[in-house]
Amino acid sequence: MTTNEIKKLDNENVIQTYARFDVAIDRGEGATLYSPEGKEYIDFSSGIGVNSIGYGNKKWADAIYAQALKLQHVSNLYYSEPYARLAETLIKRTGMKSVFFANAGADANEGMIKLARKYSFDKYGKDRGRSTIISLKQSFHGRTITTLAATGQDVFHNYFFPFTEGFKHILANDIEAIKCEMTDDVCAVIIEFIQGEGGVLPLDENYVKEVSHLCSKHDILLLADEVQTGVGRTGTLFAFEQYGIVPDVLSFAKGIAGGLPLGGFLANEKCKAVLVAGTHATTFGGNPVAAAGAIEVFRQLDEKALKEVAEKGEYIEKELKSWNIPVIAEVRGKGLMIGISLADMTPKEIAQKCVENGLLILTAGTDALRMLPPLTISYEEINKGLKILKAILKGTHK
Image: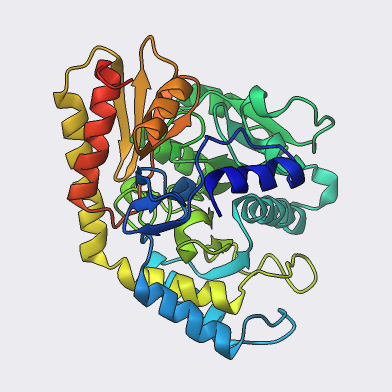
């Protein structure tokens, strides 16, 4: 099919909740995508951080093909090998103690929230009313009603009232604010180490350590939303490794299965047995094919590959800063999660110009471009993409 034919099918049959760019994608190789007509696009987005080991990855494709031929799905009423092997890998590589598999980021975060409230219910009783969760302003935790309530951005809240009760939002990196809000009704604090949708805003390391200390002191659970920062994105397997703390529970999704729907959360020793039979469930969580894809993702994301992610991120940041273009107000992030704060330019307009010139890039917050390329992107592809972006920011590309 041609691009126009695909667009026509979409416009006639799909609920129009997405303001799509005028691009149809047919296939990909490495970190390069192609339209049905063969136009080339360097991909700095990886399906919003999902296609972690790139396109056309034969070992990954072989793994999911072999599993699909063997067993594509079996309910969680029964045991199967792929999810159990994946769980073992996650536990060994993170030091956490147990895992629940879900479908994607929002329901992974829903599960964390349920776990936190049940932990306090079990320990302190329902009459204590210990169910409030502190979240940060500029955070993003999903688009279900409950995860929208946890999200600290008003732009996502309109139309969908009333929300689930029991959330309050405070400024990030303000330790006095969180001390004031740690009242007797609080059971958990939920954070992103880098606020992705909020603008690629890293939390201060000392702030995170102090929040962790306060949570431990008051028996408040620290929940880490690593949906976007996890699975190698920041140059370590999970971002918490760079902050010198270990959360009580952390969520994951996006890049874990290399392009297949899979999410979940990991719990520490204190929280590993909170959820028992009947308290939480999902039909597709731990799907054998998705789990097989994730096992291959983790096999490829060894220490050498993670080191390369950090090095590529440093290379990109150094290049961006060397341009000395006035429109670049700030470059921030970790690994291959990079934000470019713009002065006097609208990120959406720049992203549109990038698309027109063969580069796919994301926006974040109100002022930032966001890069989440495949972790396996080559330096040749990085340089091609940066060349396009530089020309647009300098005004030499139309």
